[in-house]
Image (cartoon, rainbow, N blue to C red; front, side):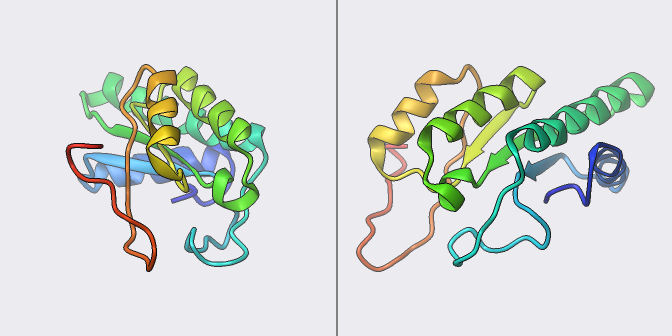
Length: 145
């Protein structure tokens, strides 16, 4: 989810999800309307806007913790690699998401074990792996992940 707008909307969305009983949220950097990352035309917001979304998410989570003890796992997702092919920007966004307080980082579009290991080694938080079966692409095994 992109949070449905800027920081205030992201905070409201996250608080609503928490009140509905969600255990976690995955906030990402795609533009609205969101597209499947594998579809042509996937676009992302600027670096600053992406970081602001995560900042707002973490702020909402921290407010909830202070108000009534509600906790929420924050997964920060970037589709910048699918949208632009820019691995350096992907790493930069992931590092910024961690600095803002994300619990888990998910970089869509990593290709191969080397990219996955490099990102996992770079970040002090868990990274998430999602896979889609496609012709000609081998899936990463549980042991490899």
